[in-house]
Length: 90
Image (cartoon, rainbow, N blue to C red; front, top):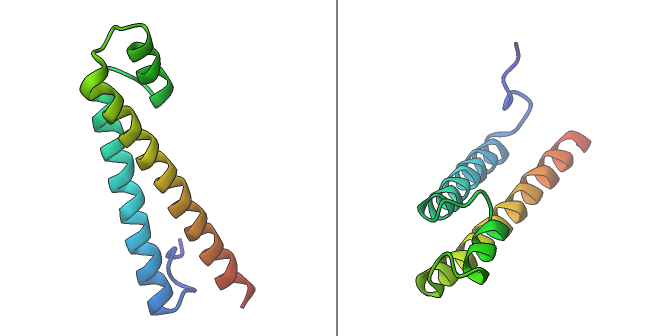
């Protein structure tokens, strides 16, 4: 089995490794916020707020944080994907 980083130069491999760790941390933070409120995703969290199952404060702030974390994670995933495509074109 070949290493994932085998064909990458050191700087690119380091960048992808750091970005991958960031994705992991963002996902864990997202899950922790949702887990605190017993929600599977931010839509469910918002629904609980709208139905007044949860108090608006701090649940709405947590909803916004979850959205930001998930959006940021998706952005970083896109960056990693683009870097990998660039590397394989060379």
